[in-house]
Length: 462
Image 1 (cartoon, rainbow, N blue to C red):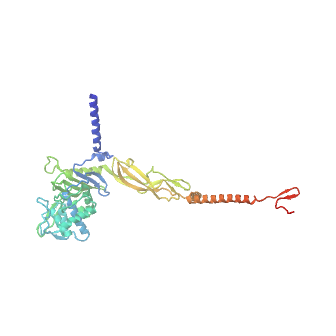
Image 2: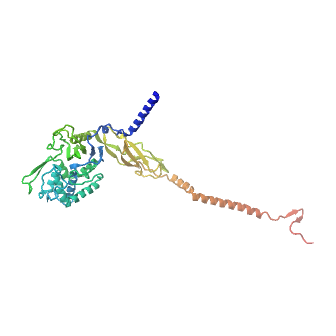
């Protein structure tokens, strides 16, 4: 009885272990990658120049972007400037739609209806102190009205590949139908950072907006990004930071899209849904800044660009060559190279290389550089690219072998074989027929001579 109960418990443990195994975290193949877990609901760290993702967590999960939305509004405004629809020094008048979609307590630069403001000042107001009303003024200047501009925002998002994004307003004030993902925000910020004016604005600590018709004195606006400025919070300055935009609402949590440059490396980080550390007060406990800095340091310190595959790669299958002069095979080599930003504990030797040949055997002549297959590099189930496999040498055709092969192939054709059989049959028939008719010509009546007397033939009459 006791043995039976023990066996039952052991079987149950085995079953439970089997059920839990699929949910165990799979190893990335790198201790560096496995060591990072951002304290955020969603996060991503990407090399801005190559778009290589160094780290991601729920990067395609829909989240609320809050004021990071303003990046798209400013991007479209700058694109309108590039297209000649507006100029940075152009003055526009804030219309009646200035407060569209904005509730109480929203961030502002105190731009009033009827105020005349330059486009460049609206960009600074939207990106530094995160002025919601500035976004609506830019929207009306670009598209004529806010609703049309929001449609343009969604069109541009689709063009950028932001497949999981939908904008409902120009500024990010909470709306249940206004959402995006960490990955989509990266795509948006990557595009915006291509504009010199945008990069200059988001890396600025403070900016003085000149006096207007409704403000007699200039206004100084400050960057809310704690990696750039100490105006909003202190203790988070990051010497390599170059932008980009903060965002927070009760529904979105603390969000930050940031950029940093160190030596020749440009990284973009996005953290979403962060929460302040429990019990923190004042400037303390801002996990959006803490985790962003940690991601940047981790990315800069633990990754390097490595050549995964190039023409020096060996152990590539050879291709048999028939009718070749001096050789019966040709060696292959990759054409070009594959490089990637890899964790420092991963090397090209850790990669798997899969070769696919167009054919196992080819007929001479073979030109040097002829494409004869492909080779794919992968690590831990992720493909890093493919290169053509080309012939490393040329192979001339052997004329004698070629001619003999053509003769052999000619006679191996079915119709030739049939023709030969027919000819052989005809020859055999002719031989048999010749023999038969020769026998008949020599087989008529015979005459005999006996002694001196003739016999045979017709009898003589008496």
